[in-house]
Image (cartoon, rainbow, N blue to C red; front, side, top):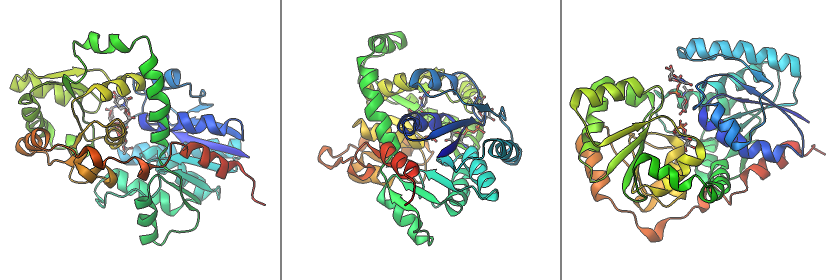
Amino acid sequence: MKILTVIGARPQFIKASVVSEELAPLCEEVLVHTGQHYDSNMSEVFFEELGIPHPKYNLGVGSGSHGHQTGEMLMKIEDAILQEKPDILLTYGDTNSTLAGALAASKLHIPVAHIEAGLRSHNMRMPEEQNRILTDHISTWLFCPTQTAVSNLAKEGIEAGVSFTGDVMLDSVLHFTQIAKASAEKVAIYENLGITPKGYYLATLHRAETTEGGIDAVIRIFAAFEQLPYRVVLPIHPRTRALAEDAIKHAGFKNIQIIDPVGYLEMLLLTDGAVKVLTDSGGLQKEAYFAAVPCVTLRGETEWVETLVGDWNVLASLTTEDILEKTLTVMPDPASRDAAPFGDGHASARIAEILCTPKR
Ligand code: UD1
Ligand code: UDP
């Protein structure tokens, strides 16, 4: 069995790290990196730190408009498929790399396996919602992280090939948190930033809906960060860097500490030590939940509705008042946190077994 795996963006490297490890003893995997993320702290760091096999192909597609980026990926992934002749194309999540991989394979009649199938925000303006719906509808294997995802697919008439496997991000958090906590650099991470555990907030911002409001939208968010009782540490996604720096300069904010994007182990430690997480990221919402750190999601909706139970995660609109109110007043119910909806931490092994066991 030969699997061609297409990845290209930061969260996909993290997810692939645990799945590739399970695939390795069972079948042949060829990795294709589309090059969607290319800065070393958005790509290389994860391959080094998480022991992900070196991609056989790096398509070097880089940044661009949705059409250009996805179109170039489509052409180049098609070439890689024709070269490798895989039995299965494996794709993750909801990025342009996800859709390009699925579409290229489907048109060549190579069956597609989709990890993180069935998630829905019900907001079709999101590029991610378009990518995941289209990918799900042309996939043969749909690996769902939650039962909500299974029922989302059923509502769209997709039942064949659907399995609830649990969330591969729970696998990765369980595996790498142990390693991060045992690492010699652990103390230095906090010291270097001048912070102490439970003495700071952790924030990330990169969603298109956040940045398309321009500097005014970022100033509204930062005006809330400025009034919080602890410093806000913000590992900045390259999409948001210029806007964030301009906003801080323009408004003279002092409570926001912008840092370069960090590696995954450092991010797990920063999440673990935070008073709260404030983010528009999909993955970070869950990592906060798994670490029992309350989260304020800076979006109108979430695909990860299970995290909302007991107010471990609350949604805030992008206004100063709402962010402040949700961050300062909402406290989670400790009795209500339950990681069971995300599986048992063995999603990757389950997926590898399904894909690599020949049909009788
Ligand atoms: C993409 C995904 C998003 C995912 C995110 C993970 C799509 C449509 N969006 O968003 O779902 O949550 O990745 O982080 O696929 N840039 C750099 N260096 C890099 C990468 C990006 O400077 O290594 C800058 C470029 O200016 C680029 C911008 O960031 O135009 C946006 O990058 P892009 O990959 O298009 O989208 P993301 O916001 O990263
Ligand atoms: N992450 C990281 N370093 C950072 C910021 C995020 O390792 O500086 C990790 C984070 O822990 C999570 C993943 O990247 O596992 C989330 O990626 P991102 O927010 O870019 O994308 P999304 O999950 O929203 O698709």
